[in-house]
Image 1 (cartoon, protein in one colour):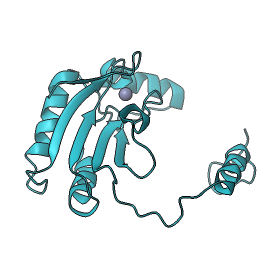
Image 2 (cartoon, rainbow, N blue to C red):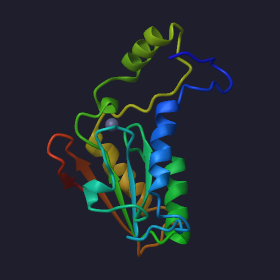
Image 3 (cartoon, protein in one colour):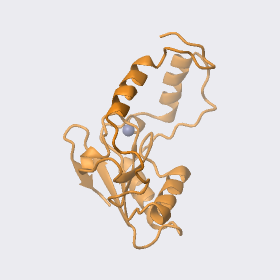
Image 4 (tube, rainbow, N blue to C red):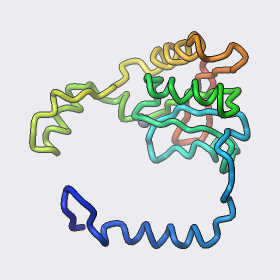
Length: 173
Ligand SMILES: [Zn+2]
């Protein structure tokens, strides 16, 4: 794969754009609104083993999905949840970290060393949100949502661990 670091290079995304053309040829969801039709929001990890809609039996248009490394309730996640709860029909929120998450399997120092080797430069200025204790982090994150002054009390908040090997969700909080 060639390509300049900066600027648009024709060709780099051809395979994906071809797939998109195919997708658009059968697209019948135009004019759809952006609310969460099933009333669901999910905060989960960026991990490619997680299919947040399908694992909950949901489909296009049903849910608001916010993803980051480790499924953490960050300020931006809270921003998404407040918007969801007030403007986008969100009535239930699931916080869903998962088994075998890379963010739980390493220290920030180890991560910086690995990224430093890959990048060929010192990444110590960069923050990486590793998780020491996944259950404790989940409990704190769920609490953070429940206690948020702009999340209505009527909104239900649950904390779950998703097992990437069985596909099962296990509710912890
Ligand atoms: Zn993960």
